[in-house]
Length: 175
Image 1 (cartoon, rainbow, N blue to C red):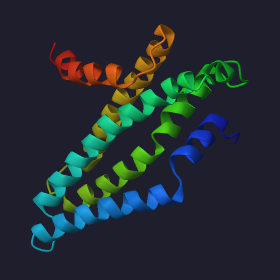
Image 2 (cartoon, rainbow, N blue to C red; image 1 turned 180 degrees about the horizontal axis):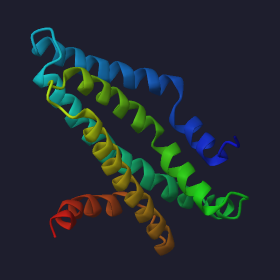
Image 3 (cartoon, helix red, strand yellow; image 1 turned 60 degrees about the horizontal axis):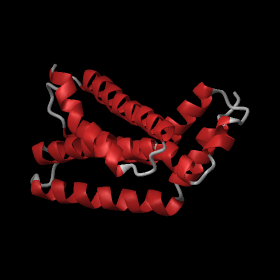
Image 4 (tube, one colour; image 1 turned 180 degrees about the vertical axis):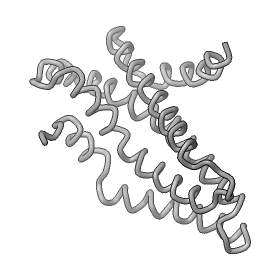
């Protein structure tokens, strides 16, 4: 198997040992508090916290990371070099999408593990996982596309792009 160099580069940038340890400690502290509030078991408070954190992490942080992966390259003036590299467009897109959000998915995986422990007996976990992961990937992919469109327009500030897109997303779903 031939590894994707863009994915490897993004993975090295996003997941140093200190960041992995601190993210695990913060989420562990939050879930330990929820465990204590649930009378020393993983119950409804733990499930709600895990689900809320999963959506916040994957939708807000994940969208920001995928958007920044392209806009930062443009801002640092390395985007043209990357576009002219030997990587194809699909390799570049998948490497940026999955590599830049690797820390996001690590934290989201911890949240899903706690949700699995705390979910009630009647919960269809497989269907939930498919919808949750597909929905989060859809939002992150849309943010990556917004980043590419912003680069084409010459925008370098990601806050002005991300906030209107995330606010407009629920309205698009209703229509």
